[in-house]
Amino acid sequence: MTKRIFANRFGLIALLSLFASTAAYAANPAATPVIVTNTTAQPVPVVGIIKDSDAPARKPFQSHKYFSVPAGSSSGVVLTTVPANQRIVLEEVSGYCSNVAGIANIQFFTAQNGTQGIQFLPEDFVSKKSAATSMRLYGNPGETLYMGATNTGGLAGGCSLSVAGYYVDLP
Image 1 (cartoon, one colour):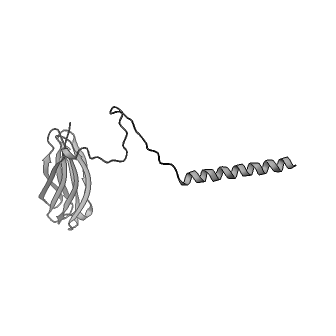
Image 2: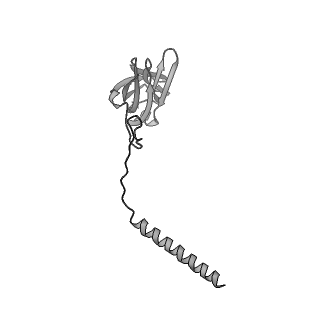
Image 3: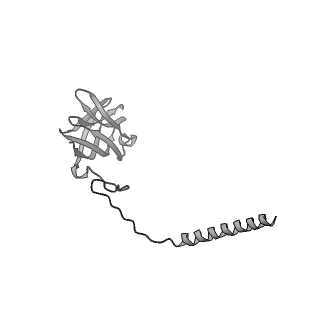
């Protein structure tokens, strides 16, 4: 029986001394320098740095057009055709339509394949309020940028719209 009590007390003392020694070292860790010896062929990976790699290739683009929209029909205007070796990125459209009951849109199309991309504008554009909205619409070389509206109302109207974005050089 005494051997068991002795073993329990010895084990308890050993366990307490272990906890005390780890707590003492954890509170004051020793400062040690870290030396990285990677070669230029194997650089240290860097995570969390944001780099906008196409920024130097950006060329601003903006255009404003007004077009009439007769009652009960659709109308629009061509803004540009994307040049060879370029891509256009539209980021914002603003403007308004007056006396137009229907929808307004911005789209890219090609003569061979029809509509490639389309962005329908919020209802604010055709409800006699000026409006602006962010967008992300891409046009590839040879595609034509067109903005238009459909007027389902009985009055002739018109739209005044502006777009802004940028061109990017393609490899």
